[in-house]
Image (cartoon, rainbow, N blue to C red):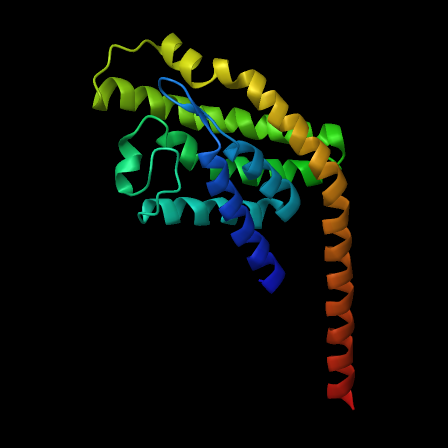
Length: 199
């Protein structure tokens, strides 16, 4: 693991935390920028480090740091939005993997983030409904959960996906060139070391 990768991983964990505080609350959830920074982490850092950045964010929050929209600590796990917090890791991983596999252009990044968000909601919505109906014992229909937990957020999600596509399209080629240069340098160092051993 390179030092720069660690720094960027920590940076995106921090950005996701900042995104949690840039919010507009609704009755059972909030409009935030967490998903934007999560998708961008996957696109720019790749599936491995993108997912790691979100895992770091989640673990710090569960350890007690008040960096979630609802605070911090293990008690967050029995709140309706906990499934969406847990869904950040696969969201970053899928967005990052598909964006790179599909070429890294604007539409490729948007499509990758869209697939990632499908998985994100597939995790978050059932978790939300179970917490609301079983733990909090609210008279909540599936439709109410889908409306309050997803449908009202879709226009905002589309804007975030477009923004991620625009930013990612510009920054991803730079990241890929850096990675290629690093691989070349590593290869040169390895060849020099082998030559030294032969001598």
